[in-house]
Length: 501
Image 1 (cartoon, one colour):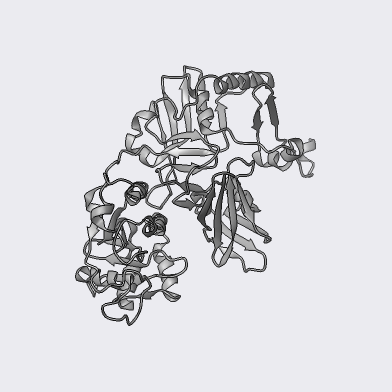
Image 2 (cartoon, rainbow, N blue to C red):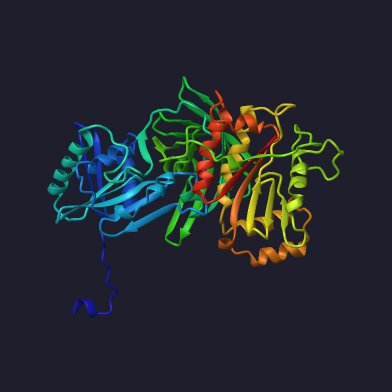
């Protein structure tokens, strides 16, 4: 027998790629057994840049089927993610939409869905990369006919913001520009936390597992350009976002910035950082509470119109120089900085032999102060900011950076990396305050994430609490900006306190 003659048998497996362009609608459909193989030569076939179908048009492929008999629903985190909330959540079963709670809409939007359409048809969609699929096999002619039927669904009728039966999830709509400066910009959590990354910048040592920081600076409404600064450790460059361009994000630098991301032995990505930003979109947290990802605006199903009175705390700032923030080892009595005064304010509740207080004020800080309170089993992330004026008021400038830092704290809530990161920081410039090395070592060695709750504290003596906490006050920018911040902190299973005067 030929196959038993001692020679090695080699068999080639070929990939199949079907591309169908519907000229009237200018829609391109791809069917492939290997996306990686198709991507290797697709640019040689199609010279123009392709734009993904926005969520609202993608949803229309299932819009005519009202029985809502879902057998699978995947929900992606539409808010800035943290360890306390998964980046993605999937529920499976018959009529599974009934098990998705309405409260999920505060945090989650549709990621993918599988819908049973009668006895023999099952269709599905996934918002990432504009995927639609049918659970059946057929000929190329049947594939073309199916694509034609999808065109009719996509092109007919009004744009919809949710899938049938899932209207309580965060809604999505296409946009061509943004009209206000974001509060914060969060790099894609699914990429930078799911992969082990190495960033290469010319003439700089490789940077490992660093999440780039994107700082919004200026919005040019006439040119539709959002100008930002990109920071990777000490490296800085200009970054521009323009939704009217085929390539949304553009790096302005002479340096080549490459990223290698490893998830497993067979799952390795090597691309430029610009390509990563245009494939794994950062999230723009807008003052209205919506989130912009690529050309989609996602609006969480928020039910909070009034912030709880309990988050606003009036503190006595006597003896504090409210215009100075940085910690001083030997401050002048009666003129102490905000961080020093904050330490004084927590002293009455601080247990010397069991609590831990860490001063982490500096570059890439977790917070200015991190307080582990043993008797309540709470971790407090404390971000302090100095006032822009001599007297308390309701200046928007007093909250801009402060609220952004608060939302970045979400990354550390219930994070498995928190203790290791603090150990690393303490070996550097961070220091223990009123805490012995032995007390810190005992807590760090025995720390269990699920035994602790989390609280974000924002001391800003420049806030006049009576005024900034008044929802009915005209042009109360601080109150309005605090709502989306509070929503995100609440969605990450943490609490919030705002300290003022």
